[in-house]
Image 1 (spheres, rainbow, N blue to C red):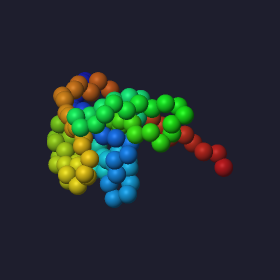
Image 2: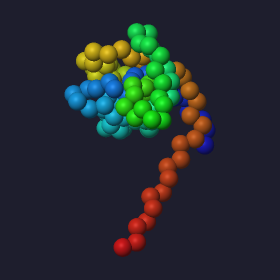
Image 3: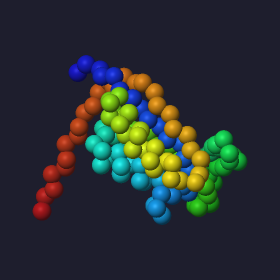
Length: 120
């Protein structure tokens, strides 16, 4: 397979950010799926800070602590650019801060797995 030019979109938010009473990271991942993007991953951070926040960190005994979340979405330039306009509608409605970046990448391999056969 030849490599393909693509983009990675990264959204830096907090696990406490909400959109219509749902976690924002969850809303973004489901929206990426709905718009047919190749893949999305939400990763919870252990420690971080933003432009208008203090340093936060997750300790194993503090389950409800506010921590950073990074949502990464990968696809072709065209699909990412279209999804960015969709994403901005969500981002503009939240009262909290965030950071959105995109960068060009080279997609080396996309391999779909096979679904497991279930025996009844």
